[in-house]
Structure formats: structure tokens, C-alpha cells
Amino acid sequence: MLPPTPPEPSTSTSLQGLTEGDVSAVIQMAWEDRTTFETIQERMGLSEPQVVRLMRQALTPRSFKLWRTRMKGRVTKHRALRNPAMKFSDPHIADHRRPHA
Image 1: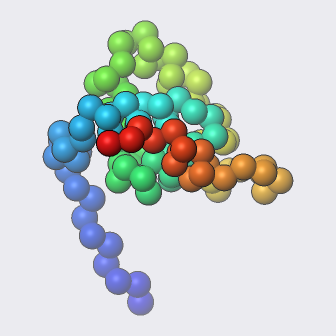
Image 2: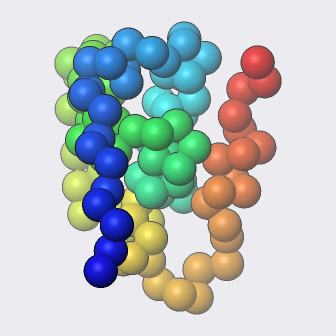
């Protein structure tokens, strides 16, 4: 039997706890085709719905709409949908673009 998973922190608390640099890093990773939502969750602790909420709050309405249109159906944003022949590692990409604190 699997151990119970801890409850996800409330959206408002987890988003409010982000610094300006964290928000910038999440926005950058969310726009990148190669960085998956799973990597964003591992690095920043935000689920895909939380990333969508953050993007809606941080971007202009036009930019948010462009981003959502771009993300719909993009298989590179989810590890499980990727072609195994892809030769890049999204955690490595996300690491080198993370702003230095």
C-alpha cells in the first residue's frame, strides 16, 4: 500500500511565497518548449494549474492568451508525452537558466 500523499499547499500560499526572482524563473521555464511542467514542479514546487494561475496573474491578458495557445497540445511540456528519442534533459536546461540569488 502506498503512503498517503501530503496535501498540496493552497494556491494562494504557495504563490504568495514566491520572490520576484522565483516568479521570473517560473515564467521563463513556462515559456520554454523544452522545460516540462514536471520540472517546474520539481524546481519550484508548483503544479501545472498553479503555473497557469501564476501566468494569468503575472502576464498581460494578451500575453497569457498567446502562451495558453502555444502550450495547448505541445507534447514537449509533459515528459510522458515526449518521444524517447529526444536527446535533451529539461532539468539541465532549467538549472542553467535559473537566476542566481
